[in-house]
View 1 (cartoon, one colour):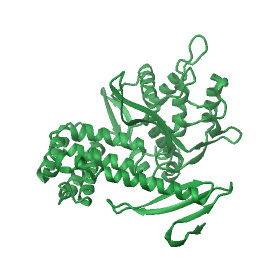
View 2 (spheres, helix red, strand yellow; view 1 turned 90 degrees about the vertical axis):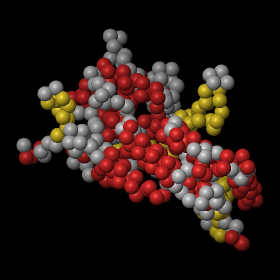
View 3 (spheres, one colour; view 1 turned 90 degrees about the horizontal axis):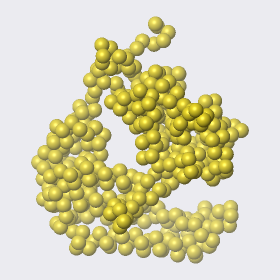
View 4 (cartoon, one colour; view 1 turned 135 degrees about the horizontal axis):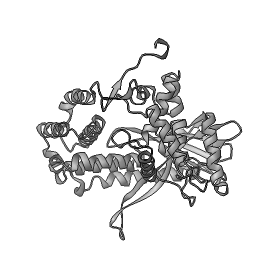
Length: 415
């Protein structure tokens, strides 16, 4: 890689003869230094691409300077949305993150009185009243309230940089909100710290997921995929992005490098349904790191069974997890189907819901089998601190006098 003259970036000569040019610029609104990278056949073509990207960025910044976006003409909710769209336009967040953040804005900010207040008139007392209400309702988890706090705080920090407000009304409350969030996150002795499938629930779930009908076919075409989640601890989006090319059958190695998610097409509306349009994209994994994992014997057996169910759709680029017709699945489809299996396995929705519990069950099982938390974190593609806090259950569940009780058992060798 060589540095170009006059601070014009770095040029890399690629093995295929193409050129990759790296340049940096400073965002005039946030002061953040960002890197631009383009690849083309020649250096001149690279520079043309770089200039186009810079022009697009400057055009996007100019849009936010128009009078129609002046903070004195918008509500708190509109400011949060404008900041979110700015981050998307600048490539600072992924499209899937945009949708999650927009849901938080819609449900935890816009749906309340706070969302309708004019953005430049918001007071510290208004913010305090809003979060007191969220805590008092007792509906949201601590993490959901924390996300609303972060979105609101970031939007006002952005407005400060743009000199559209003179103070951030969220900042004085950050310390007290953190204390309230920790208290909200605390659980009683009868609540399990991390909810996982108990051994009996896992056994019932596996049996139901792999149940065959009278004709010998599996009742649930995705049942095999659910068991694969139990055997690998993958995220659902990672499973949905897997293709047969990602599986090295000879060595039993699975490459996990992408996630498949549904995202909004900006603000485009489907005129026939009068609803926002969505599309599916494949992006990097949640932690932006690919990993190759060695599969258990059961996981390899499950993949073999999936292949046998549809050998005509098992070429390299075909998805591993599909419908009966070979179409790729969505996370929503998977959530609906797993609920049916839970119901038929005798697992109530009060005890278990959703697919993420399969990831937590995998992590807890491996921890109890002797894996350390660092090994588990590397295998499932997450931070060790996250695994310790959210994926490993220290308590077991049993029925006592008609109630579900969480308890801490003694180690096996001391019984």
